[in-house]
Length: 331
Image (cartoon, rainbow, N blue to C red; front, side):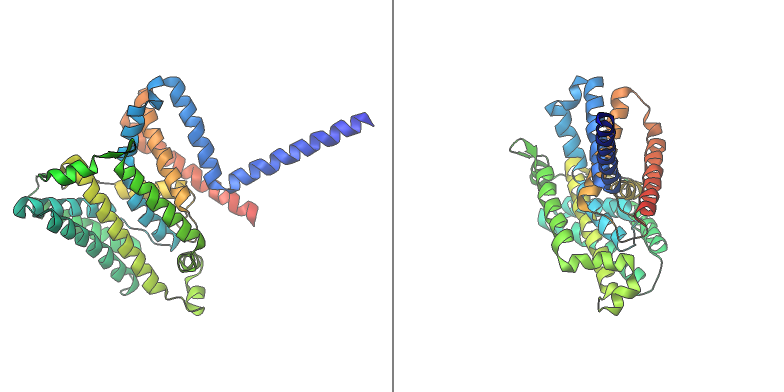
């Protein structure tokens, strides 16, 4: 009798562990969070300076701004679209803003023109995809080349310094011991997360991504929705381009090359899918943190930066395989 009781209790514990692991693997955010904690423990062991205030603030200030444009990437992926023009668009925004400020000395005009440049790129992408029915890959690839060419034309192939001290001071300032950019990103991320989870208007993005024809049949204007998302992505592209340019104090026409692929990888690692209908702000930001930690780990351990692409690619493929495994389990 006692032996049977021990066996039953062992089965109960195994069943509980099995259910726990199943929930962790089915909930991508939980799995990524565990990986992040494990990496932080490992990096703290390898280098005591990892958890230092100076190192933490350096990571936060350098990567927080990516969160804005990553949100735009996420919303597009949910609707089964993606944008390859992000890096070039950010560079264009920075060059336009810096050139306007340099020529006129007017900060407000420079910021406005930078924002408009990003919005125009995003809107054109949206029109090409929703009105002319081009695949988002082709439309945004064309925009990528056009934006990068404009960067070189406007700047004559040279870096444009940002000479306005006000924007430099603001973007490099701290509040309550944290970079202002990080606090703004945190606030923005919370708002977007709540909207995606609670707002019926934002839930339409998921319906569109899962079944666009079905969404249209129930009265959702999917073309208008996708156009808005491309425009929103352009706006976030502009915000990030302005912020990075101000922090770096210079606009470089070759800046942010390949950034869009990294952002898409971060979102997919965090639970988004190129098939649409999946993704969360929390997951995307956790993907951003994980990729950032990987880069920091490479520096601490002494691995050449040339290996970053191979490591990121391996993690991305593993995330895709995990997604297929989870989908089969759910089915």
